[in-house]
Length: 207
Image (cartoon, rainbow, N blue to C red; front, top):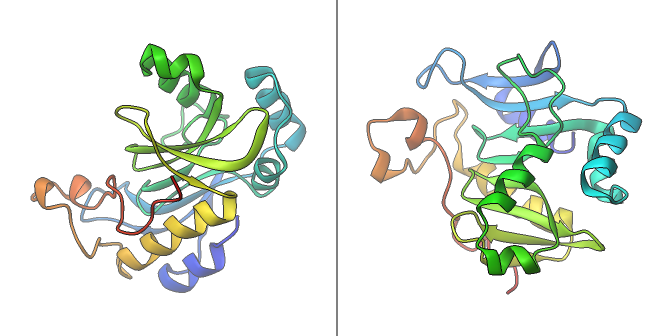
């Protein structure tokens, strides 16, 4: 997984357990909460088959390169997540499943937007914003508001999207995993105080 060296430098070496690596437990939230989780890579031919059967298209190169390294991730207390494919469904720690997340989003879309939408969703920001690419032109990354599915920004490629949010969130969480600016509306509820589900200033892509 890219960026792991920066994560380990700030929060310590990632430990391996079963099918994932993690660091920075968050005991002030719960005994099971973790700041960063990166899921072990699965056999790429299995992932490619799952993707192609689900989306009727070849997996784009940037996504294939991600899955060569990991089966998705949940970073910064699931504030920034890249979807994977669930392979251990009875385990507590699983990636957000790409097939399920796409089905859920399309089922909730307003009819007019659904008819025009040609996106495969592969990542999220705290569940409040989702990121996708076009089936037939996966080079650009679109950011949609998960409540109304309106486009909030466009990024020219994966790196520009991921770097923008990774860098902002990396700075937002301290060495013990506390959010430096807790969510005021959720004061007193540690799990919600510590989650980033609203946009960080100056992180929107081009309109």
